[in-house]
Image 1: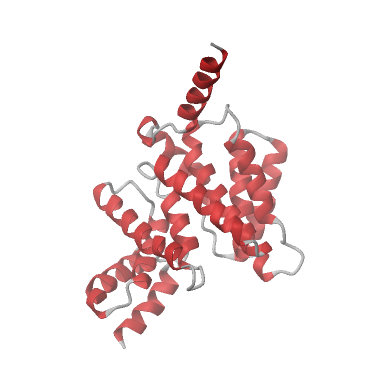
Image 2: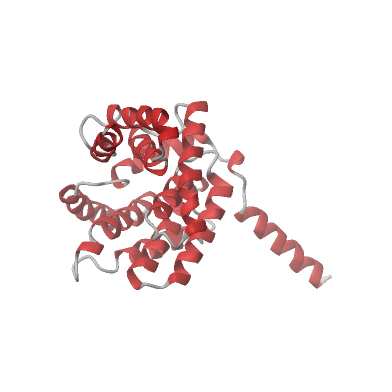
Length: 255
């Protein structure tokens, strides 16, 4: 009887941790996106430094669940955009991001509609730790976490595929199998966006259209690639997302 009870507990725990995305509220997931958007995909380093201090202060004043997610995300952006260009000042932020998000990921009280953000950025943070420490096994673990996030949340959130694709496209050439995720993931996001215009925001789609074109440099894809680059440019009038890179790639394709 004891063994049966243990089996039932393990089964229940597994089911709870693997709740399918269909049980998440798309509208609630999107509502959280509006509260997190200002700490995601920040490419202006001056803006990022200001936002880092602001979010840390907010968490100190109100250490609630949402502010902890915001802290984990801004630490991720700091690691991505500042730590690799600094010898000391911004080292260790990938680990800070992973630690904050892991605490939330492993908590039974975490709002489940926050999980697409937590799980996706947690995987990306682990990939950044692997890059910073040059520990390839962490990269493999990160892609395992990405797969779990994609399987659970990709139907309601672009983040699992967007962040996995972003990591994959920047890997060295010899990571052949993992690099293939870039082409697959950005294609998948575009397909879902075509089916539901509310799936991803303008910033993400600007990056995504540019990334798709970059993954398809061949002449047989040229018409579609140029159309996507034009969309990436049109979506980003103030150069907050993929416009600069899209314009550069478009000029190269037109030569």
